[in-house]
Length: 191
Length: 222
Image (cartoon, rainbow over all chains, first blue to last red; front, side, top):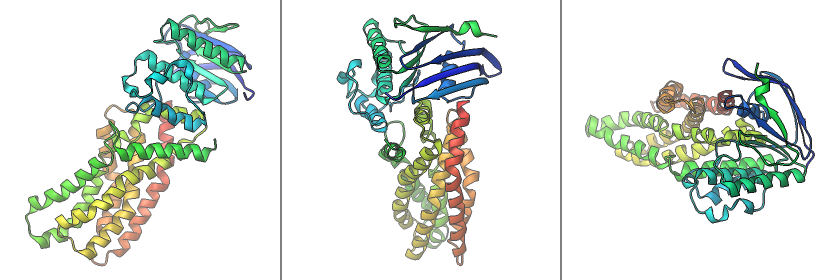
């Protein structure tokens, strides 16, 4: 996996006219994982979008080395298409070979995306992140809607990614069972 | 994978979705039916006088083309913004401008080309003769890329707005008026220069559209 690094320095997140958090900083190298914790509305998702470069930071700096993959509440798949065809679009863009077997999507291959349940949609989204081949994963509530079995699968996929030298930043209000997990409680940075 | 091939994959998807009339996107057939329906209704409205139809019919075809351009607006960009496609493309370093340029071309293929093919049918309904039809086709060939470009720009600007569909139609009309004036004007005797102005107006719209639409997508993220 290509070398990767993610550093955030003195970051402030603003939504509308309100500054949600300020002074957030962390630095992650290969194999690192960070759990962004905090109550609803504290700015976890906004922070991930800033790290992803999709919105601007109110203050502070983000340094990214390596490609990014983002998994948020939206599923970037064509709703009317069968799951396999919809995911093939991203595999072709990312140059990935085959679908990831770990997420148990093979049996759903011909089901149109709009008929998938919440948990199945989340599994598809995670499989897209894996297939992207990006070393830095930004996961927004990746365990939402997953039952105990798939929570285990998702966490082991994250661990496997770290073992290959990848980085994972996980915004979640659920406890995560990952080894050597740094926890950043955003509530501590509220102004 | 190279940028060009990634953009090719995106363009292929655009074509399939816009041409094929995938669920919820209307496809190419709806604007086409609307266009032919207007040409069919007009003689009922003004009567079967062939001379009157021939004199005014070509202008009606231009108006019908402009109105048909409104129909696909709300499904052109909005679903991809809503599902996060544009964010995912941005993460992969693909510029919104490049994606939008592809979408203008795909939209023209799914909207402009069927219109060009349906025009002889509409012309027959309106008693338009061969010479006039040739000039009309040439005008539409020059003008529909501009209509497609304006359509994509407006679709990007109104993506995510609650009344986006209705607003899009209202916004398209004034922007498309130059195309209508030059397009219909070129059909008058001695109006050949209108074709040049039509091509110029169309070219400006096509040149501006990817940048305006790309900027609109980025602005909507904030």
